[in-house]
Length: 77
Image (cartoon, rainbow, N blue to C red; front, side, top):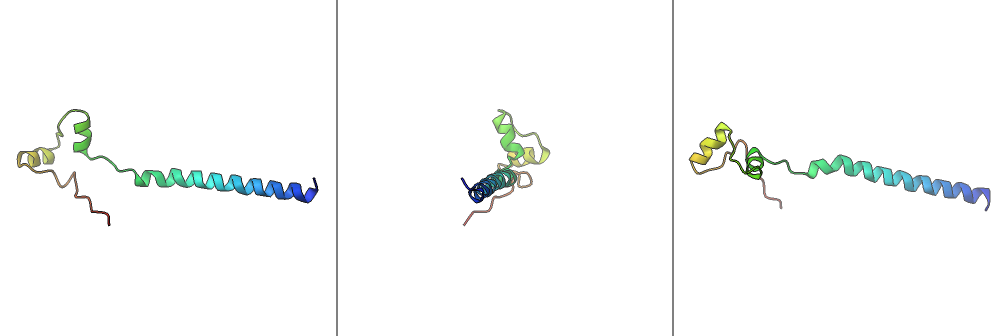
């Protein structure tokens, strides 16, 4: 192998490594942005309980859901 071929091969490998690291870092940073956070009522339901926040209890008595803790999710277009 010529010296120029070895240098080109090293550069190619460094570029590939840089791209892999960049993509990995981007997924770590962007991933949590797409994860939906659960509301207090959803967490309580998973635990087999009812939500004990004052606003949620009052809304449940009225037959509604608490809009403070469970904001309406906008429909995606």
